[in-house]
Image 1 (spheres, protein in one colour):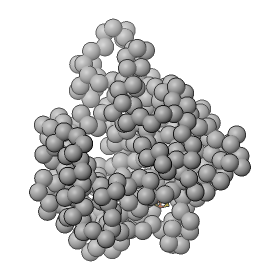
Image 2 (tube, rainbow, N blue to C red):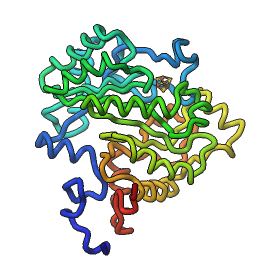
Image 3 (spheres, rainbow, N blue to C red):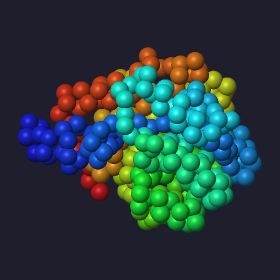
Image 4 (cartoon, rainbow, N blue to C red):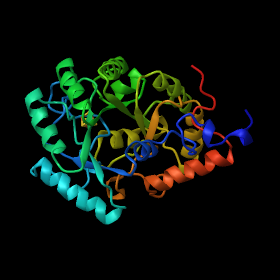
Length: 322
Ligand code: SF4
């Protein structure tokens, strides 16, 4: 197919954007914008409390990822209400919301506690579903069985931090789980008919650009609904900052131009089936130890990536072959 033949009808995801955009999916499904509202429900994480490990992943500082209105001393209802106000002031008003259980591992509690917290969120007017961020080793059939019931009425997604397909890197960043653990969790969740999301980081120590590109195929083989990609952002005071300062040659910290060209090649080899939610992370600059490029908002990043895809007349999955 020549590039000039490509038009909106040829993209399998049913719109003219050159990647399978998660935002467009919601607009198409619900007829308008759906806003995620983050919640910190006071969970911890087995990689911090000693169950799997202590100290956590070497890059982790949850405060850097959480909006200011999310504090576990506030109820879920209060956080949703303040979150809706927060977004209303900044963006166009949305009529529907997804309660995003974001901080730490949001399935790391008994089924009773989870039920109480999730259902409090679902009772809030306008909340049409849940996004539950967690680790691949914090899910089991009992929890999935319960979530499967919620799927009858709500949009439900479990979003796993996977970060890399490389076990050597997972060990090095102290994730305390393997890639096989992640594959099993994603497969099981999908078998239960629940949307599955995953999070990956590009630029982790010891990984070459070639290895990162090869992940396009490995990730494509997973039954995922959505993915989030991030460039590695080194946060002040973390173990990974100390590692970087000791051994910077072991890191591929992308400049913006390098990242743009990497992500285009990655997208070309990535399945058209999986929706993409974001291409970069947006940690507030005050937390960052190094900033290899000027801060850009997520919508700007998507715009720049789309512009480059258009210039090169390419798109997500153009070179994808299983
Ligand atoms: S699993 Fe998540 S919350 Fe736990 S230490 Fe790692 S990044 Fe932090």
